[in-house]
Length: 318
Ligand code: GLV
Image 1: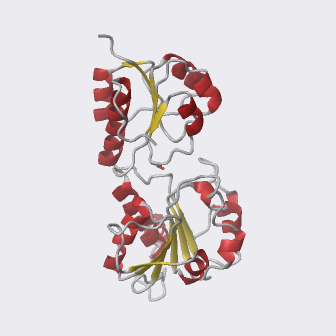
Image 2 (image 1 turned 30 degrees about the vertical axis):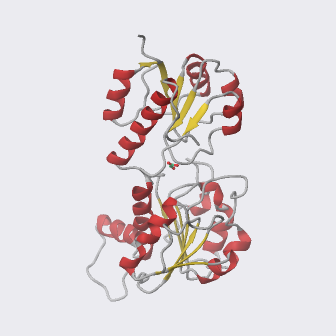
Image 3 (image 1 turned 60 degrees about the vertical axis):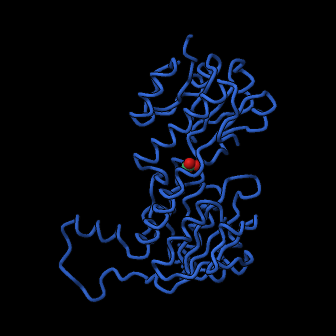
């Protein structure tokens, strides 16, 4: 039987590509870069299955021009890049990659938080510059985390994994989530609070929300004003949940002590005002970027595609 025709938009880790080449016919050999819109349309038009990433927009027009397409497997947990209802209306299954990236993303959240609180990036730059003159009693003084309050916006899988790492730092966890946590997920030491209490009570505020119409700019000028001027803000979710212009204003006015960002409103562009600020640490969207995690995500896409093409329910349909 002929292997099904699959369009993979970008090169995935080698073990995943090896499995894909064995089980499918590839429309084109993917490269590290995102395809042009024309290449994406051309591939989706022919293929029975599409494995894409968060950098490709899978909109209604593209789906309408793809008569053979049965499944779109997004190699990401967030799926704001896909017109899900338009896909459903055409009988095209959309899948994502939950769970497997939870720990990697929670780890990266803490990496950003520690980098910011302890001025790791500035320290590295100083040593590398060759201008370091030795230990100094007032050099690069940071912020203690022990005993502070960690505020979490969005207590889904990743928010919970971030909270589970907090006891090691003896931090108190407060959170605000639209959905109540199931008892099995609840910890007696986490406290659910209103958004106002979260904003005013957090020493560190970290965002773990999907991007939807309701969450766009959920942290804007108003919300930033209610935060402590000593607070640190971390975002490893999706850039547009945070108003970047309002953030840079708050940082420059000293109304917020620092920000650790892995995601941006208009990736790969970033507000020019956020460049060159010592109290900002910026990463290039690395939340799930470990070899093991990205390989699991890729394999999950393969499993979802195979299930749909075999007429079985997709394990991770959204
Ligand atoms: C990454 O940003 C993801 O949504 O998996």
